[in-house]
Picture (cartoon, rainbow, N blue to C red):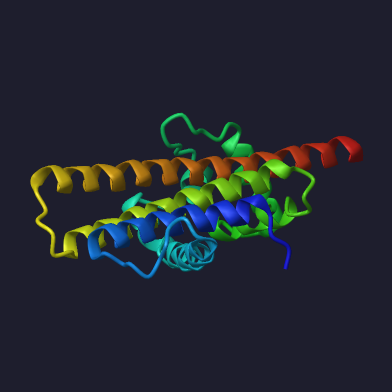
Length: 198
């Protein structure tokens, strides 16, 4: 198994955050935050947070009012994230797949660009996964804080809601950026193939 910097950062940062919150609210004294063993524990906690965030993706899509790939293929962007030439891309995917199912169309586009010729696709995927993991981390922190025995005041609740809201907005933006990169790369590939054939 080959570890990259992303793998370490994406697991350790959320893991450390959760460990620090647990330590603060539940006084977990068996973990020395500054020790090497805490990095291993943070990695494991982060790994399971990442797993949980993957499982919760459908829930996030529900609260985001739709799957980003479906929305972009229907020419519905999010903030400044738009898919230019969405009609042409959708028609090309319809020709390639014979299906109007946006999930199938996106899977086809993703398969077409998964050769690694555009490293930005992988970078955007990692950025989205990290942001989704941080959203899950914010939710876990909120549950830990709200279920702790410490007194929780209005400001604490407000800050937790703000943390979850900001994390959700950022994860949604990153999801749209990732989908747009996949579809734009697919479209560029189709145009190159068309130019070579013509």
